[in-house]
Length: 209
Image (tube, rainbow, N blue to C red; front, side):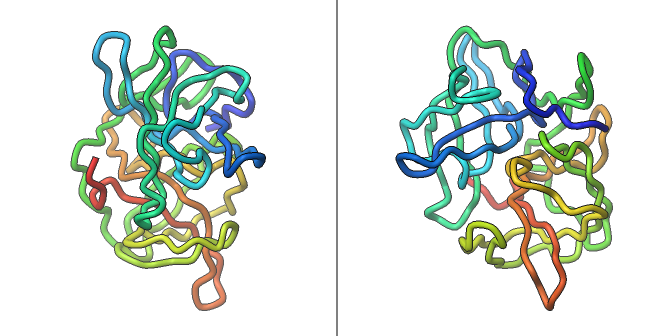
């Protein structure tokens, strides 16, 4: 499916562009991974930890000029590339929704999805690259990200059919791009293992919310 690109998308769903700040002066784009809970006007979503800074920092959609939430917890210092964001009151959001095209979303399952088997097919929906399919190579690996140089622990390594790009970080990684599919976790980036460029994602199965 195509990428959401720079569109402002409401309600908030996985697979769309968000923007945060690394440090004090470096903007970073990423993909909203998934809205994971909602209680009346309050909701929570997750995205890549390396793109959105520390607790209290703002996250925007599509850019920081339009605030979508505030970082609640960033697990990056613990080696897990995932940040939990408290959504802004007044912005609609769809729990478990993933963008697949203009005015079209699917709803996926993400509560204790387990890990995909080695050799299983997965697909991510990145804000920049759209749908990219791949095959699971390793279920539990420590990798050093090829862009940030940061070490990520206990990730799933995937051989994607096409390279992902900057801005896809945080994208939901699914068993299939269809209603009822499992969301295994969030795309982190790429790594080079034994001379081969591969992708990796942070699995929900290894995270304590």
